[in-house]
Image (cartoon, rainbow, N blue to C red; front, side):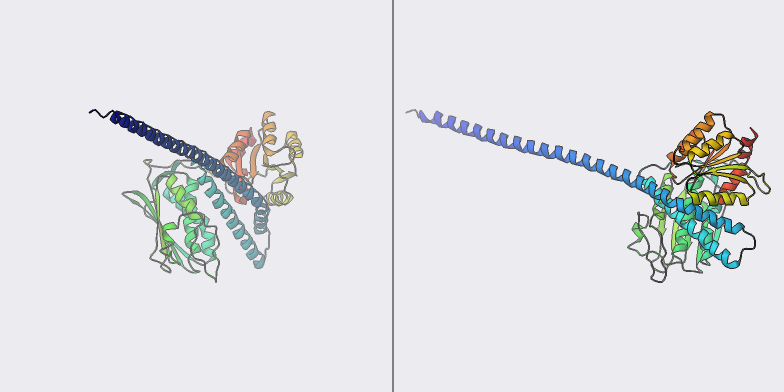
Length: 424
């Protein structure tokens, strides 16, 4: 006898299987929708976090630039006042000692600001290099000159050995000088008074190798792997605060990498000193173009127009230039300064950028539009590359960041470039 119920049971099973498969498909589809929603949420969240991070980084850089500007303004008259004290006749030994303290500490503060800003610029990719052939001797000499005052202050001995001073690098002279002066400053900071520092430079198969060493406090093994990280510092003694922000070595590493080189730190441990080894590719150039000759010795007295709204900066700079026999007229805002400049009769214009009324950029634009050929030097508390580019594009011949080194300013006024402008 045929079982007529069997086909019905098979149909029921197939229908149950289809329903189960449909339910499973719906469940999987729901999981896919949920996963897709989570993916979309994660993507949006990641973009939001990136936007927030970029905005925070932008705010940080703007804050650091403003901080540097506000701190450089009071540093400028202090630095200039110290330079004026040096030129005063019959200065007592006690006053000379105080002047040296003021000068050293002002330069130290300026270097701290520069390191902090450079760290921010490098992290945001805003530093560019001015690459040109430069000799090892030139870079080392400038770095030693920068670091020597603090080394001498602590009665430390620095031995410099350059195997071949004529070796040539393709690099940014200013930034390479900063690399080695930072390393020397770091060595001095963590070496006791009367200690010994070394700087040795020689060619190797891998390029130029420069080793900066000391017999100081050394680096603990747990700190050594992080020594180039931002805000990392070595141990501080209770007897003497070494100071610093923990950014100098981070700047060193990034600048060396931007030059295609490497930097490594080594120490046998606490109290065993340290060595920092920088390796940089050598240039194929056989010689370096000579610098333009600098004006030295006697100079012509110039008629200088100084426009600066900070009264202390303006008055101290005016007094310093007058000590060098220049005839200086001062104005404390852009409108008055522009009116004086438009009357003519000045050889040199020294002008702040952030002025009330008419800013320094507008002052020089209007003067150049009117055909003025005066030699123009911009002063500013802002030191970013774009600030410099904007000032030069507006018509300034030179751009100096506060606090200005007095000898730098005097050298510009006595330079061939300035003399050529005055002859027009």
